[in-house]
Image (tube, rainbow, N blue to C red):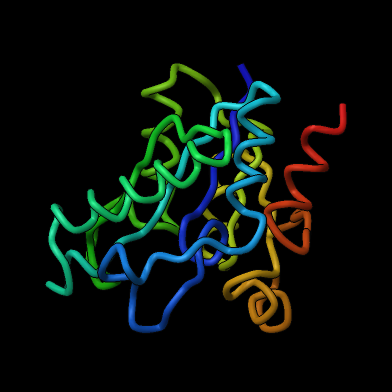
Length: 178
């Protein structure tokens, strides 16, 4: 079974410095839903791994997060795709948890739940913390230039071997080429 792990905000949907706090604020990036559909239809299990500190900050609750994710699932399904699982960290940046990226806990949990090694698994993100988390578990970090991606590329030393793509469509095209 092939896997691909996607960050949410800035990869699948438009990001906001004020957080995505409601389903109305969740807006897909052009082409991202079709990219997920292409990955699904090519045999990839698509997993989302996302930091959601808005919960820990009290900006929204679990019911709201679930509603946002239901909207995302429906939109992906309408495009012909599927998201197999969503993993999230609800903690704030000052937390000592192990699940908040760049720490590897969330990705390790994905490996455990799906009984797979993450070595070489594509992990797509728009921030340095996504890439560092991927590299720490031996996955393949892929930076998209959507969301914070262009700024990340300009201002951060990327982990060795990081692949750079314009957006999730380019990633899907590359991964499904074979």
